[in-house]
Image 1 (tube, rainbow, N blue to C red):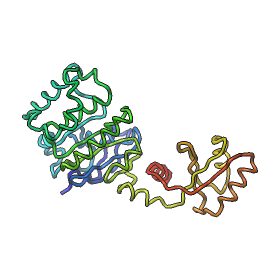
Image 2 (image 1 turned 180 degrees about the vertical axis):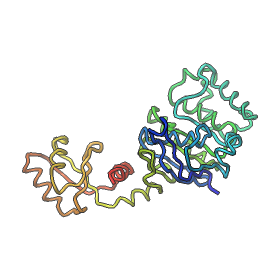
Image 3 (image 1 turned 30 degrees about the vertical axis):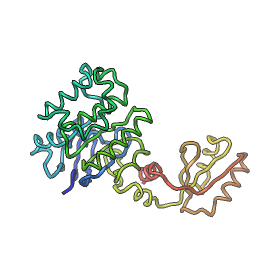
Image 4 (image 1 turned 90 degrees about the horizontal axis):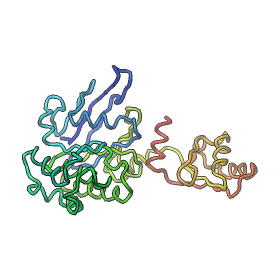
Amino acid sequence: MNAVELHKVSKTYAKGAVTAVNDVSFAVKRGELFGLIGPDGAGKTSIFRVLATLLLADSGTANIDGFDVVKDYKHIREIIGYMPGRFSLYQDLKVEENLNFFATLFGTTVEENRDLINDIYVQLEPFKDRRAGKLSGGMKQKLALCCALVHRPSVLLLDEPTTGVDPVSRKEFWAMLTRLKEQGISILVSTPYMDEAKLCDRIALMQSGRIMSVDTPDGIIAEYNTPLFGARATNMYLLQRSLLADPRVETCYTFGEELHLTFVNGSADVIDGVVASMLDAGHTDVSISSIRPTIEDCFIRLMAQ
């Protein structure tokens, strides 16, 4: 049995005028760290709200640990830990008061499940008497994660937990998720950050309410079906304009400090000719070399298909 299953789930808003989730199906295995990857507006939060029994889908079915999100919503709320994208704890309560409050709601205590949250709680303990609203962004997310774990859930639903968090806190947060997975907790996490995708066991790439691909990060990259190249020159903006105007170039987009491009029919034989054309056009220090695609390259290519 899978930890999470969705089958042909759809959700619309504004009386059907806006489609947020369109016929989405995927499954999360037990003990898996599964990433839902996509930009804002892709439909990730709507899926999380359906799974958390906070929103009814228009069609399709979803279950957690074999329990239906509609028929068995009361039981599901007892076995999941849900962390919404927006900080939703009581900001006027102190750190320790928030933890005790949520533990009490689930009929347990912080001490009873201390072993599960200890790695996170030790970082919060120096601030236990501070009001939640006065914590830094990273500390707020750690407190929210503690509150989601305090009743020892079997499935953890994390909706963009690292959005707006500094790079160091993001790294620490993902290290925590890895340790939680090792303790047998199944984790479904969403993120708009493509670099976080490689930290998951499997990922689903999502855009405009649809799932474009589901596989391991390496499996997604292996599906990239044409050679990819990186280009550099003294003036990158003008180089991109010239490359886009060249009939031998299929795609060309900015990626960090270089341009990523593909050629028509995937041919690499035209590199020398393209470089010569760019030099003839007045560009200097032009170089084009073969590179390995990233998850973001795969996402961009899937969007264009």
